[in-house]
Image (cartoon, rainbow, N blue to C red; front, side, top):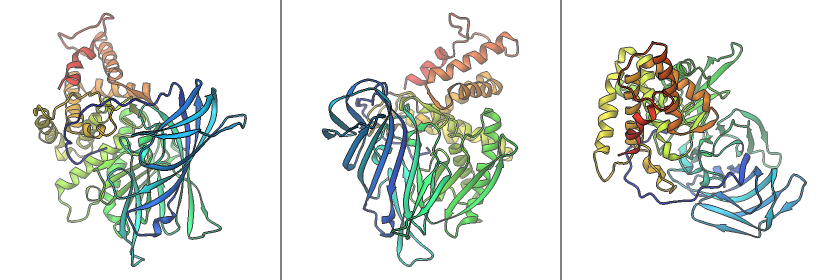
Length: 496
């Protein structure tokens, strides 16, 4: 995610995490009824239902899920043998709901938890985002829908395990007006016109790969698009990339589409790990709460930071190119490999910031773009970092879901990128790319912490020192005679 500005300081309060060693979500099937979009309003109630396949690992009396601003919850648990349990009561806490049962729930590797609820949808900067628009074919305003679940707002759309270290698969079903289209992380599996109400269509999407809840996303509205097919790792397969724009603005998406095409090919090559999903969509969002968001397979952008026309100045085009590369690289750093907790946010945002510059320097050498890193990134983050009231370590412990958004700032992004730049300058680009390739391959579809990154840098550096291809003096070695990158880098990330 790329943000508009540096947030204010935060107080670190302790919030208990959901215990996935007791109950683990395996797959979500989520249904939203958005047929009400015919009504041009920012405030409406949406009926929703989810079916979660869960693995109950130990006997428990309660099931806890993250949930905020979700009402009229009805729940039922069904064991593999068909036996059903209904909660004795449901407790609504500040950031979660607790389903309380009258007896112990016994271990079951394939239990089914069904939850029906009502979600109030209103104009906001997170969660489900309604946006009014003027249709070219309709006199009155209509309502479109977008999502912004990072960092902790998936829980405002559906009860879930809303923490990055908990990965599941997701299947989405959306009931929408027939004049609109729906886009999500994965391709559409089926579309069905409702027999009782032909004005609405039920859109089903294919199952996602394993991913964190904050990466789920969907968009509903009327769009134009431009598209391109990109050769994939398999010569018989192509990757379709689409850039969705407001109706009538199709050509304004061509520049960003081309940047997405070029950056996907570049990162596929550099990481030696092909982009994993069968499609990639970019969507222009009116009044986006951030500059961009990396929902896996569904990148969303603020419309004035993604659309380009003949009057767009070069400096804005360069900024847009940076932003597209930033969100594209998140498909590896953030989506394929996810930070274990928000404490390690810099592992995705610092790398996305650093690699957006590496990508632009490679794709457009005539721009001399790498020269801008100091003025655009380094000095900007130093300004925040030098303020004793605002500074914080790059790696910062924070558990309050209402405080987590505040670390999406120029320290996590820019200072994180700056120490990566420093390490890459010290060790060289060959070790950089080799280490990143190993890191991604070792932790793909899982999570990682800072020490996991330092480990691959240590191993690559030690190997090259031993074979004579790298000569650096006065390095620190650990007890196993391996370059001790963690000790070298520790103070840079854990101290303000």
